Amino acid sequence: QVQVVESGGGLVQAGGSLRLSCAASGRTFSRYAMGWFRQAPGKEREFVARISATGFITSYTDSVKGRFTISRDNAKNTVYLQMNSLKSEGTAVYYCAVVRSSWTQDRMADYDYWGQGTQVTVSS
Image 1: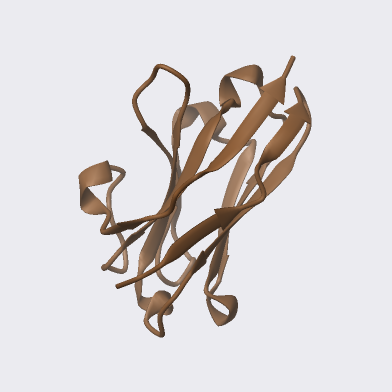
Image 2 (image 1 turned 30 degrees about the vertical axis):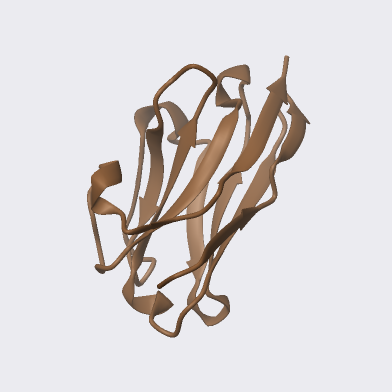
């Protein structure tokens, strides 16, 4: 079992930045790909970004490309999501997820473990 805990959410003005962190338990963290998803009020959860186990491969949904950066520190069992130039449509609960594979797709069903989420609110 892998425990996943997100942190770093909060209230930010449009155009501002936030960095989310995701800490995962377990000695096999460095073998697993990770992803960030978000769920806005009244909408379905959607893919945001993913990163391979090594950190060498990343992928983003089109709406955040050039503004968000996913990274990881395997020594700390932590994945980050740096969010710059935030827009009001970025208001959502952001979830971190783990997949027991070195790489994966952007489908929710592919992920094995999920955190409880962290709220990000972008004020306009």
